[in-house]
Length: 331
Image: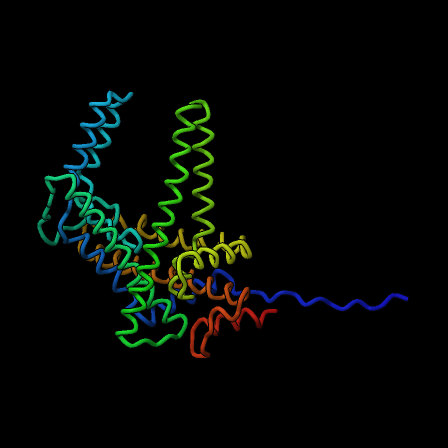
């Protein structure tokens, strides 16, 4: 006689991607101050000083010409074009922006454009480094309040500033780790390519695949830093764990948020030659991008709690608590 087999408990169904995006957009709607950082960055790009790296590009052009590089004409032309790039847009490196990458001539001019072209390569590099540092700081000024809203964390101004500073330092450490790892890979690849020139396409393909895999598995590192309040190595571990346990849903979230954040600028660029169009496009992009950022954090919090519930404690008043309960109720 066969013994009756016990029915195994099925894993709890998690909130759908559309639920996460809807929750993120709702959060942006009820807390419009979360949109302030991307709006201010776009205002800076729109009416601020344009910083051009002419001196740096001229130095690189001289190096190329002195080295007699093959196809140097194309390289020199590219460097000349880069000499008119706007370094000011580096502040938006880690924060969503509507006007990044848009030619200034295609945007309605409310003030005369001011251009600063430093006459020293060292000053150009120093300014670029400072703008990147400012961009990393602004990314934490932007994302820490979003994380606090999602988790129901209430912080005094002093505690909030310390949280932003701590997250900023951890982000810088993470970027330093990434740059160090890239250098450790690129140097032996460059040496091997010089010795075995025929293998250069293979090395390049492997490097691209590795970069794509890194971007995928490290996608939630920023979220881990601001949500779980951890250092860069632990943030990497949490991000890899969440992605590896939710590959299909992570791909769906990434594609959906990329579609939202890149699709709107492509649609609204044609309206940037009029003042109302600029204002509307900047506000819409800030709203959509903030909703997408919040959706990513909702996803990370929900999947992290599914894996290790003790890592994130949520009060019942937190928006993420209700979303997690939604997922559990579908089981």
